Amino acid sequence: MPYLIDGHNLIAALPDVSLADVEDERQLLEKLNSFCTRTRRKVLVFFDQGQIENEPFRSGHFLRAVFIHSPRTADDAIRAELRKLGRSAANWTVISSDREVKQAARAAGARTLDSQAFVDILQPVNDEGEPEKSETTLSDDELEQWLHLFKSDND
Image 1: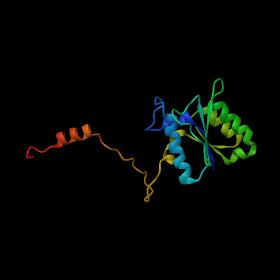
Image 2 (image 1 turned 90 degrees about the horizontal axis):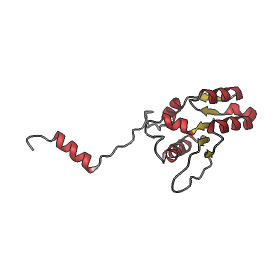
Image 3 (image 1 turned 135 degrees about the horizontal axis):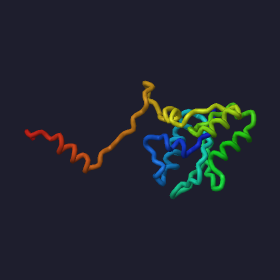
Image 4 (image 1 turned 90 degrees about the vertical axis):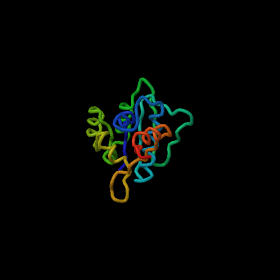
């Protein structure tokens, strides 16, 4: 089942991406691209006035990003996409925590899923079905602080 996603709404639910970051859209798109590759699910994501810094994002076979400019909003674009889909909207799941967007999706026959619930689906799992842990590396300064903190008096 393909997904229609309210991009900035999903970013707000992610624990490791901030709406304040100028690269927030790119970070979400990287996560969505991995998800699409892993699940072979199509995703259409809408962003309010977003932009990708540096190099442009190129949509692929499974992932397409649409940046909406004022006076339209991503919510407007999602509703328009649902109207365009017509009866096939029933084959789609809309990801948003916005009450009005979810109401429009249900009225069109689409399924809905809260952004926070989709975060759990978005995270890759290991062979045991557990969420993969992202590797955290320490800077040299942080490593020195930890070594100093835990250094034995006998050393």
